[in-house]
Image 1 (cartoon, rainbow over the protein chains, first blue to last red):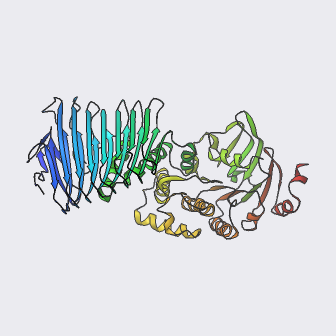
Image 2: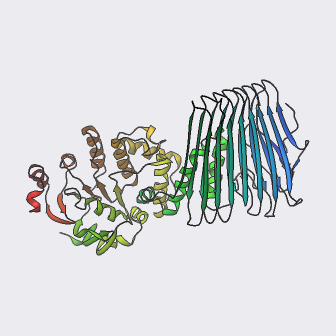
Length: 333
Length: 252
């Protein structure tokens, strides 16, 4: 493995992640500069290599550079390799940061990669990401996007299933309030036979928050025996919150299993009444309902310790608090 | 009768939904230690009465009053009624996917304790209490980690209701058609759970369609409700008569 990352817990006085997850190595990127390594960041796993530790990449926008920033990260998972990545992005001040980020992911034959992406930024920040993933035969890619907080967050995710029996599982949870905008734009391209993919994106929208979901599953003419599923569910908490959803299927093969579903809804009143008759106050019952709604996505996080932390962050977020992890003095997870 | 000792006093209660009057004037008094059964044909207003007592906001009280331990019950929110000691066992318990039964009841218990000025139960205390109360209704621990009522059979849902009741120890339990959808074994388990929770200080209102439940839970009083008001109140022998003769002789 190219060791171009280091563990740097005391980067600046204001930037301490005191309790990293067990079995996790941390890498910090401040205003696009990899700390203690070369920029842009790239990671290459050789054939058969299994990353022992999870790599947590913490990208921070700091007020020392307020210009628009374009960054890139590249991940290459060689044949049969196994790797797990956590990507966190934060802003350390409420400045008008604009970040454009491109992430390329190549998963070679029978390799397996797992990403958990946590986006937690201030209301003035705009963060545009493009994920471009290519999967070879028998490769597997699982990604969970947690868009907890941010002025504008746009995730464009393009996945090409280039080899048969490749598998891709995408999940996302987006939480908006005030006037936040969160946008997930997915292109899942089934180019060859016998591949499977699933997408589960859920959003909880409060105040005047807006979410957009566009999800395209494209099945090429030869991609028989494709299995592709997509679901997008939105929970509208306020009268002014908005969700736009556009599920799309383009299928050019005839022997496939594909489905898509999209819903918009409010909190269930019967559930609410039931909980209140047990003595759970209405406000608390609503939080429980929202946690329950988010649960399905958080369950996709395979690392239990990370999942627990994310549950706490999500709950605090739903309570209207900017998501500070209790383990840290700052906003990183 | 000692008037000072009335736990629940319903006087001239009229209730509407969408401008349709469902309860047309209900009067009922319940004292500590008593078990009351409310019977009546479908659509007579039994479930409406229980829903109104629990604070369901879909129903509008147009007249009358309900006093619980001398306080106006109707001005309280559903959660405040729960804290005051009123419990509703649902005819159709609600499924809440994603909220585990254990988290649900733990949240409820601690909210109750908060109102009583008590500290939260420790994990060990809670577990001990939960195990003990689950045994009342023969529930095994696999129920705790599952979503509230999710994937539960009809009988399991009803047992879960009584488990909630056992945890919350209400002063007044209103059990809405707790017997519906139960086979004989489940009915026996549920009924024995209810009986076990009976004390001289608490009271129970069982709402039922059939006399069957009353073989297991012996009421002190039976009330027949029809077209929104109680048309007959008597002792437990009334159940037998209703089983034999139906409701027609009371209605006509």
